[in-house]
Image 1 (cartoon, helix red, strand yellow):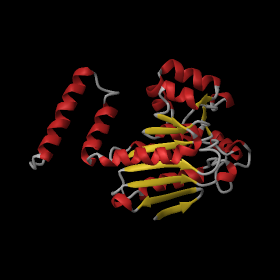
Image 2 (cartoon, helix red, strand yellow; image 1 turned 180 degrees about the vertical axis):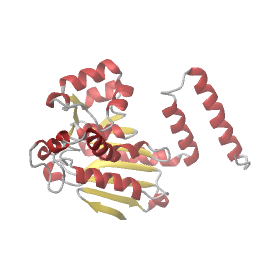
Image 3 (cartoon, one colour; image 1 turned 90 degrees about the vertical axis):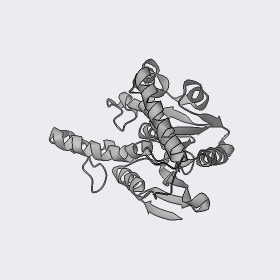
Length: 263
């Protein structure tokens, strides 16, 4: 069932398992799923349109590449039709530029919402904004031809689409700095070794491996998965003793629910 199809983004929900699995597809393969402000608005809309039945959302790209990053028109004086060019933004008030970038970031923020586990299925290039979109998801399954690169610094910019926080958490500060500052490619095998990828499979097996992971996630009780995701996300901000308290509180809620006692 297709719920959204606009500006190179398609949202579908599988009717099996009571609509527990949704797929967001980057559907502009002729441009290797290059991103634009219109695509970012469509990605944000996909998050808003996600039905409450969805427990797992898969993000994939059609064609040879997951996403080759920002459409090069962004770096021209003309920019995108009907959009302020990046150069115009730079010349305008700082508050306006901040507000526009914050709007762009909305395409990347909802993937870590507490009630859904998100999986990026990555093949080919995931460059710049494409890399950051893959990082926005909770989990990443990569084809053996996947290539990640953070090119922003090489262009005199910084990664500003929410990718820096998950990158540091996944690979550590020193590796993250080296990846971003050099702009080099991180190939699939290295991505798995350093924690960027949960799993690397042959290109022909990417869809099946992603579906298997989604099915395994749906098999567990939903509320237990939600509580576990919240615990693990919060562990990044808590110290050891605070995490112990959080674990006890979460387990108390689960035991009350299983006993039919409510909160």
